[in-house]
Picture 1 (tube, rainbow, N blue to C red):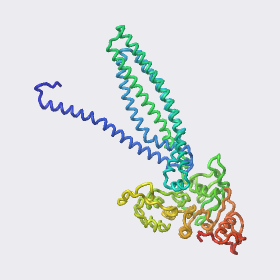
Picture 2: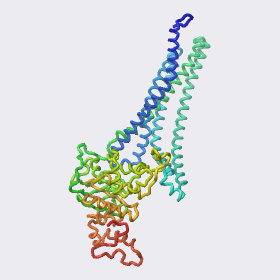
Picture 3: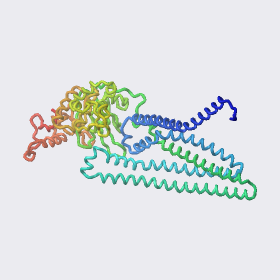
Picture 4: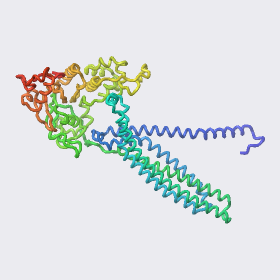
Length: 580
């Protein structure tokens, strides 16, 4: 349409409106595209992160989480999972745009010099080959320095951890750990530096090749113009076309190698998400039935890897239904390993653990664990509210919003008074890492607890699980004072009455009333029996109990008989803190 004097106003207005709309679209399109790209990346990152940790959740046992190689792979998977799809998609669009640019300039270059067009295109082949090789090198380097970077992260976290701060300051070790952190960073930097030098050399060579080709073409074009074979305009077109094709080719090669690198790193994500199970779960695994007979350890042998010594060597004993068994032994005797095997965090290398006569390997692990309540010595301290710390013992109760079970569990664990006295009660955040976040809390940090208070919350988590078939108590009172310990064990004794329970403790007074005591030594059952029977036998248990009893006498030096003087019924003086 031609705008001239006399053009109708309506038509002019339509043209102006169309041009204005086109200008708005052109102006807003890049911003809209950027927003859409970022939104896609956010959604992809959310989905990929959820799938990654869902895959980690599907792992039945603990072995992978104690494998440094898997932890390195998991860290790289977290980095690449949410980023790779977006980068690859963006690279595809960029490559497509670059290809259109190349075709446009290439048409002009073919008109002037077909051989020069071929030379420029062929120069991209070695460039692509070199860049892909560098991309593989970078991916290999990232895997190689994974342990180094993870150690640096460990030291960095340690130096900013409030739980470590008191020791670091008291012992003056912060500088030592900072040096270790810097050493790991220097090691990683050295690897990056070597890779960057390889990249610099390779890309410098590729740049020189492009310059030689462009220079040779320019010499030819000028010579041809001097001979009258091409015009001055053709020379200008030739120079612009060569520069345009080379720039577009460089961009395409860069985007291809970037996508290639991201796909290589994405392999770590796929290795975790598509990885096989760490422990075999039978396709027709049976739900764990309610315990009616008991649990039998039958000739159980276990070691954490073929390179490690045996932790358990032919362990045999039975936990009868409704009975309590105390597990006793020194450090490294295999007590905690037995608990892990019973929860099916690992499988025995030889022998079997039977639940009412059924091998644990034939049961569904989730249903088995749903029948177990436990307090572990290395219990977790969650940076969540007090109510959530208890509620994680049974997420169904937590999600129901019913506070009554939480309070009942806390009361049975002796934690309700402590929790009720917190600034916001059960809604108080138990952390110094985050602000409380309550409506009236402002920017106040959470409240830290003592070790004993945390232990009571861990015990409340176990109580919240209700009357599970099996109760495992692994040093449930190690962080409590004598009075609190007595109260806890009194409550536990009532709670486990008539229930199947496994008790683990170094404090023999806390387990002496168990129906059966099993003493582990060197990964074997050294002896078993009741407290009175083992004391009368004068074996390992009698020696251990005597040593603990001696420590609580008023004048150990004056007591020459020490703990060898047992009463007529086979009893020794109770160590303080025992729960009779």
